[in-house]
Length: 295
Image (cartoon, rainbow, N blue to C red; front, top):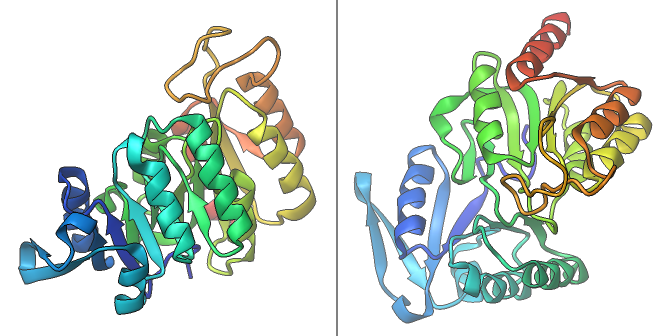
C-alpha cells in the first residue's frame, strides 16, 4: 500500500500552463501519475500536449475539473502572490488532497488557507514550500525525482526537500512505501505526526524515517506521539546542529531562539522516545539499513 496517494489517484495541476507546472507535469506523467487535467481560467477549453502523445485538458476552475474528471488530488504550481486564492479554490471545490509546492508564500496567507482547509473537514493540505509526495511505482505528486528510488517497506516524512531526495537515494535498493515532504515553513498543513499516524496504519510500511530541522517544536511533539502511538521502528535526523542562534537557516521556520528549537533538544526528545537518531543523513540511512535487515 501507500499513504495519501496511490495508482488510483487522479491529479489536476493548478498552474499546468505555466513553465514550472508544465515541466513537472511531464515528469509526473513519466513516472506513472494519472494527470487528468489542469486549471487556468484564461485558458479553459484548451489542452496541453506532452511527450508520448498525452493530451491534458485545461479547465476554468477546480470544481469543473473535479466534475469532469473525478480528480481527488490537486498540486498547486502558482506564484506565491496567487497561492492563497488557488488553495481556497481547491478547498472550496472539496478536493480531498491539495499539495502546495510554491515557496515564499506569506505566513499569514498560509495560516488563512490552512485554517480554511481544517474548517472544510474534507481537504488534506500538504505544504506549502514542499517537494510534494511520492508512492514509488504508483503516483508522484510534486517535484520529487521518481528515478532516485523504488518501492519498498520504508516510510519517509521530511521537512527538507533536498534531504528527502538524499535519503530516498541512499536507501533506493530497499525502497519506500511513500515519501512525504511536508515543508519547512512556520505554518504547514500535514505534519510529522499526521504522516507518522498514516505510516503506522499502513500494513506495507515496516519502518519509518523522520527528518526534521531546527526551529519550532514539531519534532518534540512528534517524539511524544511516537512514544505513545507508534509501534514500528523509527529512525531520525535533525538538520542544523551547527546553526548559529537567531539566524534563519534555509527554511523560514528553521530558526533557533534562545534554548528553543535546537537540534540537540530535538535529538534528545527523539532518543527518549526510542528513536535512533543519526548524526548525518548517511548515518541515518545506515541505521535504517540495520533495522530493515533485522525485520
